[in-house]
Length: 334
Image 1 (cartoon, one colour):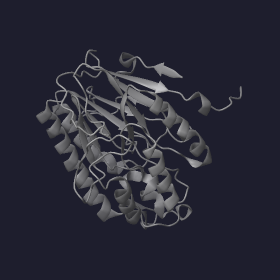
Image 2 (tube, helix red, strand yellow):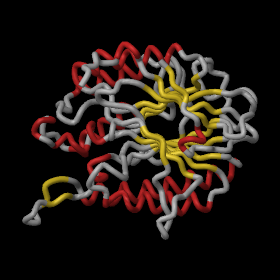
Image 3 (cartoon, rainbow, N blue to C red):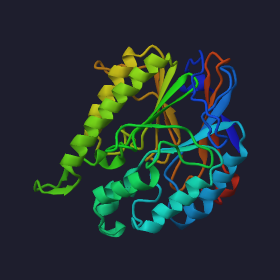
């Protein structure tokens, strides 16, 4: 089932156009060649899946629908390959590798909290989060290519932060960041002042790297003459309490977006509720109108979202929710 959202109704008017500058490749398995600036295409937006036994049954149906949609250029997965109470054992990562490899077109993944920052929970196996993050980097960020049967060429930030990525597709610059829920892995304290979660050194270094990568992403967009920047991360920086340690990211996004002549699209997961809104504000709490946020389905809602990009359309970005009929529950009338 597909429902089209009127972009004007949700305030998500994004003006795109100009000359496409996607990387071309002679490799037939690559998906980063995009012919012509006037060809419309779509991208799929997903995350927070599969969660538990139900998710492991339903998520392949989402993949099947995405694979069957031949207009899609690539898929973005905005974190959480399992739920927050499942163990962070190797089979979870192996399943994600298998799932991502089943996408016929490119898939770009950014990490979520459930697969690393939350792994120190006893229910998760009491793993060292930094060791699990190292596993994620080895498993999903070891090459310059995206995941999927066809691939996109990605620019990775550094060997220390290979999960932070950037790629150019047409007139749009895409930036992926490791900004997870659970307050960005910053230290958390109980009422007595004892630290109960988080890692100050890890947070401080990665936060600085993320801010630098945002700067570089917007600079690359200007250099390419991009009409829009798409920023992908996992955390819901507004409602996933606590949110104090997302302040630097929001401030940097506000500064860069105000100075950017085009439009900015923020894609996140974590809250599992599909939403299109404009949550970013300036120093006077005024809504920054050239920034739109799309929050993806997840958890018990195993569906997907697409963004249609049509340079011929003055609005260019149109969002669609795709409800997978087979994943709907049996409703009980109140």
